[in-house]
Length: 111
Image 1 (tube, rainbow, N blue to C red):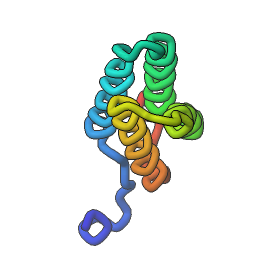
Image 2: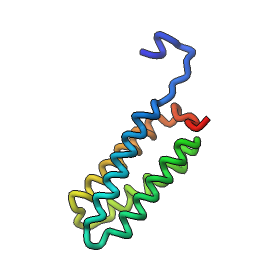
Image 3: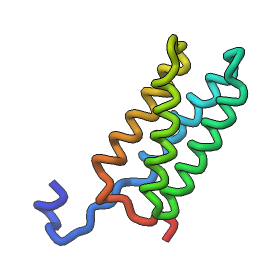
């Protein structure tokens, strides 16, 4: 609809909605902390998600996608994933798909 109303306008994804998706991902990284083996994994995933968010804010979408893919890959490698790991996988996968499908609409938000 935007292109019909303003055909020359630049399409930019709303940072608020992206940030909310990141918050769900960050919450999911904290949820795996309670698993016996996962304190270090939770810290790693939370750090990587935080760096992914920072990279996206600073116009580095490719780096963001690599960080999110690393988290998603780890969750996919778990042989018997817990509910928390499955939720983390879903959050990472959903965010990857959303950003990947709209990569041409991701500016340097910090500017």
